Image 1 (cartoon, rainbow, N blue to C red):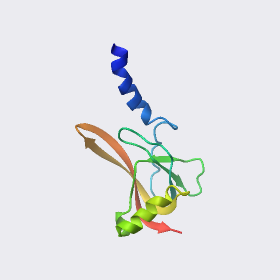
Image 2: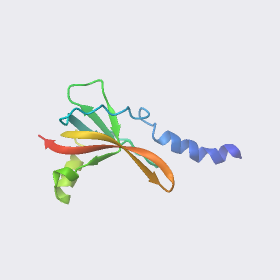
Image 3: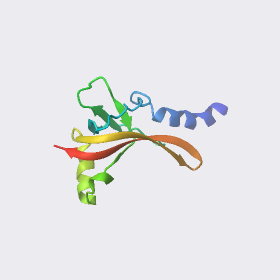
Image 4: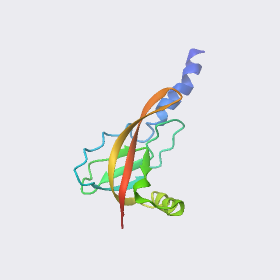
Length: 124
């Protein structure tokens, strides 16, 4: 009986690990914002945080950061343009200048950390 009660908990814990485990620590940013390619990685979760974005620093093929969110607020784009940018995540990704930040949050009393890509410039 106890094993059946623990099964949902085990599935929740595995949800974040279905494709490669926990995200690596974000690289330390230099004074100017580095350039990244951000793309959807196909991970879908049933709980938070959910690292659905792969963030690849330009010129560093051996570094991968898994992020939970991409913040476009510094671009001051309207909702339609933001939707177009987000849709490009599924089509090979977007190249951006950005900062990567760890953000502590809480949901229903449970603390967690989001890795957020704060975009400062969209590149072609």
